[in-house]
Image (cartoon, rainbow, N blue to C red):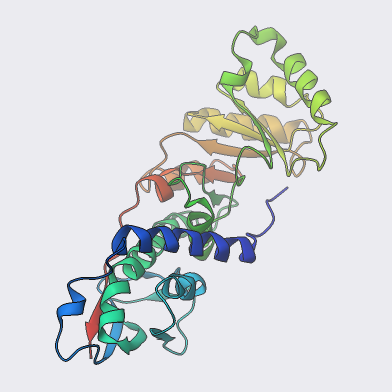
Amino acid sequence: MENPAIDTDALLLRTRHLADLAYAEDMAERGDITSALMLPENGPAEDQLVARQPGILAGRLIAGQVLSAYGDEVQLDWIAGVDDGQSFTAGTVLAAVSGPVNSVLSVERVLLNFLQRLCGVATATHKYVEAVAGTCAKICDTRKTLPGWRLLDKYAVHCGGGCNHRMGLFDAILIKDNHLSGVPSQRLASAVFAMLNRAAALQPPPEFVEIEADTLEQAEQLFSVVGVDYVLLDNFSLEDLRRAVELRDSLGLKGKVALEASGGITLDTVRPVAETGVERISVGAITHSVPALDLSLDAK
């Protein structure tokens, strides 16, 4: 019932597209007019990519695509043992960057923008993953991502140890309360069943089917609908989350229908939510409001 892994080829293509946009924004038709003034002209540069904060690395896989948008003169060599998904401490040298000084200075900011964003997402995700360690809950992302950056953000979530939810509206079914507006509560199950009957004609079939419940009573109705993979428990209290888990288990649906908690979950509240027994916890904050991690490019 989990989404497949991110398509690496698609990720690299998306990165190059975004890097090309960044290049166009920065260079326009005149290029880097400040770096062109330096003397001696275009001498060699030997810099280091340094972490100013501890964190989780995300970006090694795509960094070459960012550099290639600016030409082939800048070389980035990662330090041995530094890989996506690994932790580092403040002061760690992550990579060596070399090339003509003008070229290095032109790409510096954009390279850091990509890496700081992705490391920030991976680091935030890892904090949530650590907070629920020892429970059955997995931390999942959402569609609350920057336009154009979804593949990269979800890649960073994966680097941080989190799980990817649906990629978009096209690959999985998530029926929320807005899709069921106007449906009387007593007809919720029959309305969902009718929608899923129509979904049976979809080719290829959806990756999974998930239905949102706003109350315990709605969750109970949804447990009777065949073909539901996940029930999304939106803004449930801890007590109602526990009751939903108990009800699901009592109906013999554990392992068949998984439960996902969502709704304003923070690092302070995620552990108690996980301890209720839900299998997934979706956290929009790990992509929509995460701070960039502080990285810098320093001369040796």
